Length: 259
Image (tube, rainbow, N blue to C red):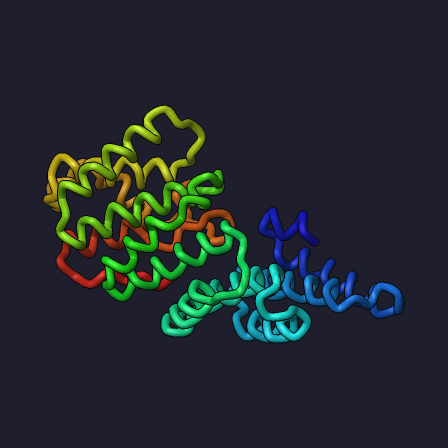
């Protein structure tokens, strides 16, 4: 189940979920609520990344009945619900959930708290509330220690917040930090390299049309969302799409964040 899920084979993963539930149903000693809920939560995860949102909500609602509010597993399940909201364009539901979990007083791990700070920051940015987004991005230190791409996503969004807030000196400083941090890093992938290359060119001139002349290949490749430049929701925490924001700034139009 977990192996196929990790490798993006969600249908196969789901088949193993069904087999596990059937096996548990035949043996009373295996019928632990937490075990059943964990498998159902995995079905919800698989449904989200297959774009089967009605199924995802059904599985999430079922699994929630087994996890006490405030437990580790309950908070982890809310991650799946947030992605279901976000990917299905239920912006207000995603924002409401992020606000609730981020401010909830029950115990969360430092990593969980930082993750929900980031989710809420993304929602604030999408709403044009850039000061609140940036304030939260300064409270995600635990994520920056992770190697799954959180650091880059946080840095890119933070730079764009500074630009939107018309703080060029702060943006320049953050761009310098980005350049220093990623200067010698290898194996980041074509998509991440294209994002880094494009945004660093902004420091020379915040004239988007002029920067586009240099970064056209990178921006267009990101916008195509194909091949090595394809966005994989299950592999990256990237929820802010730099190339769409860049093109919106260049064309003086509204940033369209929808997945």
